[in-house]
Image 1 (tube, helix red, strand yellow):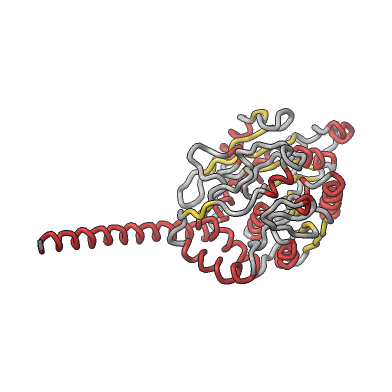
Image 2 (cartoon, rainbow, N blue to C red):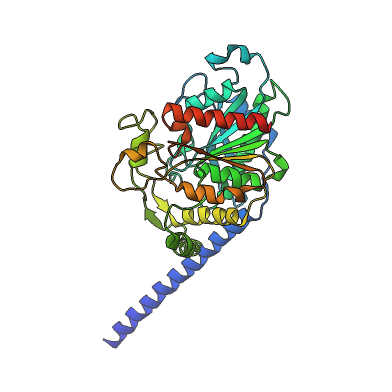
Length: 383
């Protein structure tokens, strides 16, 4: 009987020891990956790879002609391989701008989508083309066209893991447009999480000297009360260092999606497997990645480029559907965006778009036309 008792104790100690060893090893791996990315090492895109992406371009099956897609494969410093996609609206393709097609572009716009999102905004591409800009958009790894079997949609462990594919996209866009003009100024345009990412990336790539940044309702802070933002999120972020793959399910409600989707109250058709009503499953590592980037922003970025930060004039976060979701930001708090905008750099201009949804370019026509006008006027003046 005593022998059996000691055997059980031995097995319990052995199990606990194995679990502890596994957790230590897991934490070492997490620390190594984070330190590798935080080191700031830049992985240069090879010209051979860029030419291969260029040569293997195809018509984008999601948006159709004239949109073209380019596959991109990158490997951040800790060894993971990521698949991402560059989408091009060939300059001069807009039917409204036949006279513009023969003229060289003023510059290049690279658009970065938000969380639970991908690029589908055909109208935005046409407007950019009409304004005289070569337009490109990226579907980041684990998102949209870049989603591979087994990927955790929209997931990440560090915002720097996107740097290699953004570097690649910037260089590939330059290779593609080089046929028409040399040394075109590059403008970054980002929405929501893509707005935070675009600013975070530009802050760590000062040598690129981006001509301007346009941030559409950027994710500058979590949309929670003061206690959660300043006490709970930092604690969760620290725990996430050791348990990055711990699932916290899906947060938020579907009301913002209802304001966009043509099946409900909106006017847009898009792939709901790539941009779903419910947010994808989220993990603690994603929370840490966002929190670390936001912390750095709150301390202050040092981007010298002209920056436009746009947002709506009201916030709606009710659990039940209401008409407010048709003219307010249903995802982020617009006061948080306004508060942190000056921290992006010394040359920041903010614009409040009355009646704007979270994605201002998906608001009702009169509202989005105002957002387009202000964005492209700002870019013109910056260049």
